[in-house]
Structures are given as C-alpha cells and as structure tokens.
Length: 318
Image 1: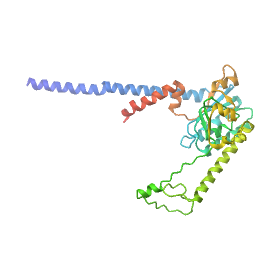
Image 2 (image 1 turned 30 degrees about the horizontal axis):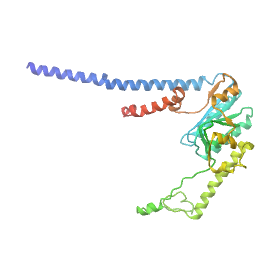
Image 3 (image 1 turned 180 degrees about the vertical axis):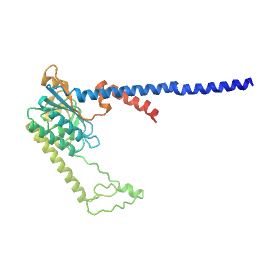
Image 4 (image 1 turned 180 degrees about the horizontal axis):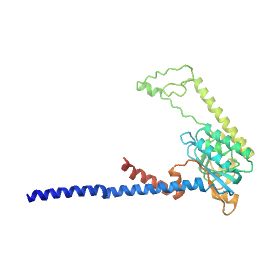
C-alpha cells in the first residue's frame, strides 16, 4: 500500500514537473527570447519609420531630398508607384527642397516603367527648374536604371561602378525539339499568325523572327533617343557608337564616354550642395524591414540577421 502511494506521489510529481518544464523550461525560454528580440526590432523599425514619416519632414527648413532606386525595376517591386509617390511628396515640399539626389543601385528592368519615370523627371525639371536632380550610382546602374538616370541633370558614380548597358533583351527559348523527343504535342489553337510568338513549343517562322527583331529595335530606338536627349552634347556617341550596343562600362570608362559627369558619393555631393552640415531627408517610399535594418545597423548586420532569422526563427513559427 505504501509502495503504491509512493508511486502515485512520484507520478504526480512527474506530471507537475512536466507542466512546469513545458511552460517555463529552456525551450520555452528560448522561444520567448526569440519573440522578445523580434518584438524589440519591430518596435525599433516602427519608431524609426514614424519618426521619418511624421517628424523628420515636418520642420520647414531647407534640405536635400534623397530618393533610392534599388533592385529590379518592375511591377513586382512597385517601382513606379513608389517612385511616383516619392516625387509627389518631394515637390509638395518644393519650397524647402534645395536639390534631389537619386541614389541608384539597379540592374534595370521594365522599359515601360523606366520610360514613365524618365518622363516624370523631365516634367518636374521643366516645372521646377531651380531644383536640380542628380543621380549617384553605387554598384550598378544598367539598362532601365541608366534610362532613368539619363533624365537627371548630372550623373555621378564610383570609378568602378558598372554603368550603361543601353540595349533591350527579350528571353526566348525554343523547346520544340525537346518536346518532340518527349512525345509532347502542342495543340495550341490561335487566330492570328503572330499569336504564338512566345510559345516555346513551336518553331518561329522567319516572318515571326523578323517581327520580334522589329519590336526590339523600336524599343531600343526610343531608349537611345531618350539617352541622347537627356545627356545632350556630353555624350560622345558619334565617336563611340558602341555606347548603344548594350555594353556595360566601369565608372572610369563611362566618364570618358560622357555617360557620367564625374566621381562622387552621396555624402560628398550633399556637402558640395549645402556646405558642412547639410540636412538630408529620405523620401523613399515603402521600403521593407531589410532596408531599415541596413540603414540602422549596416549591411553586415542585415546579412547576418537575415541568415539567423531564416535558420533559427522560422522553424519555431510553424
């Protein structure tokens, strides 16, 4: 009897210990610690964003407007909407804006979005000619990014930045022979001989290929004319027609060809515009948490935190 009573007591003790460990044990402490740091970082980002959105721009004093163009120019990244919103806000405060700096780091993207932003910049330049717009290239400004940059008053880069790539590309794969070997039959029905231009399971006729080349050439011509109009006599395209071949250049070669105006980084340019203590306000719209982490704590922290978040936290959230 005494033995059975002792076993029952032990069983009750084990149950209580298990409940305590489940609620307050090391694994739960670890989870609570993870959520604590996540919440703390979220609070920091929210406070920073609120400060930037409501307090940083409210003081009516002269400043330089900063605008970032990062990553692929695409609808997926809301490039056009974000850029349009940012420009509208900048020129709503145009009374206090000394200059606009476009900090660019993009491989390019949609020619339609690039051309639309190009036209927007030209519109604001014509309406507010006293406010110069400068581009500062970081690592790369190619294709659609350079399309946009060419609209600005001046373009600066690093000596080893990658600049240019004035060309147009359309990815096109012919998988018709592979499909035939695998026994796959394409039964696509169309009305119109050019409706299957992008169908990888059908061979293109010579007429279709010629038409695609015509489309690319037309977009390329618009691109070239826009760059010529934006850069004017500074661009040495007559002596170097290969500028429009899709080649990409280092900052050193880009300056020689007239693709850029000189070498500078954002901080240096802001000092040359406003003196020793310039006031710079970032008008970039809708950046995600990685952007603010990078701005607050640096690129290395951003990379390490992203890796840690993926490896350590995500498994515990399922």
